[in-house]
Image 1: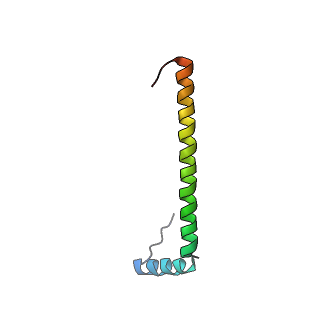
Image 2: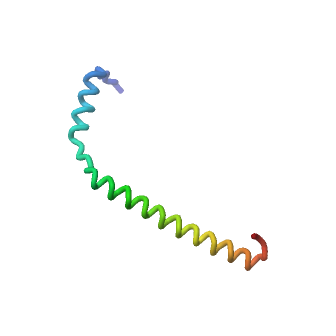
Image 3: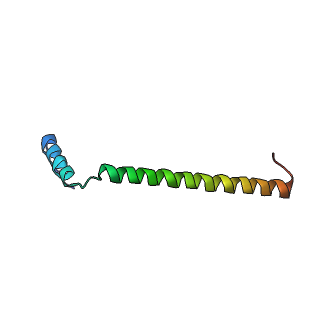
Length: 67
């Protein structure tokens, strides 16, 4: 395979050109996405905490060990 060397300045110009093509989210879209992620993280936390407590209770009742 032949490797092509690129001048670092040309590379940075290409990066800048490609970055200009990106559609960046607005501040509002970023805030909504952040709130959604946090909300789903809290929902997952509550679900797994409840599941863990129920399984711990079941193990304690079945085997008579724990707590």
